[in-house]
Length: 220
Ligand SMILES: [Zn+2]
Ligand SMILES: [Zn+2]
Image (cartoon, rainbow, N blue to C red; front, side, top):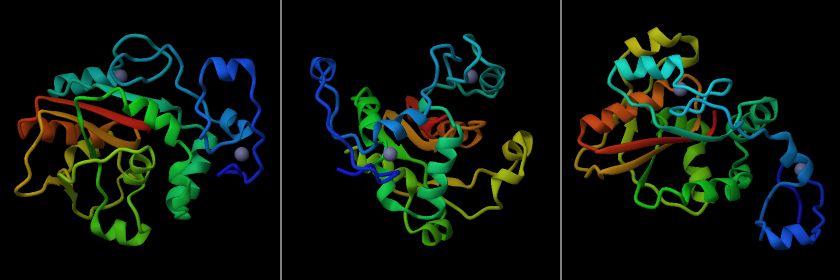
């Protein structure tokens, strides 16, 4: 089997510990590539997993004042290896790469048994451009389904705005008409940076009567 990222042939080494720990053998990454991605450390904000502190961070306190109790989990840090991955996956449009983190995602998403999954959508223009929603790809590759509840209108690229500008603009997301909002939702995105997008969508779903909305991203 070849590593999905670098193409090198993977040797299957059966060690005593791999047998003992029943390690997932269907990893799509060779150990060299696997080691380049950094897991989020033990010490992090209990609400959003921002690293370097162990109490509620300033951002989460701000969200709290705005009526949002941040409840976010993520697996990896957004380091250079991850930036390279997303540039190949999203911008070069290499859809095969959706499988790279499938086993990691599957192990995490399994923990949300009572939750229905909802993916942050792309605008129709962006979807047409990229050909696929990268978050849907990740969730599907991990073996999970999701509800089609949300839509997104086209907007100016949000990376050119700061936090207050982002929060000041009208939310480009909307709940599709005629859908039923489940009580428990896990809202999933690929990358959490300021949390502006995902936490505003969380609030929108809560205002639409979802009782418990948690958020999740592969990277933070
Ligand atoms: Zn590799
Ligand atoms: Zn936080």
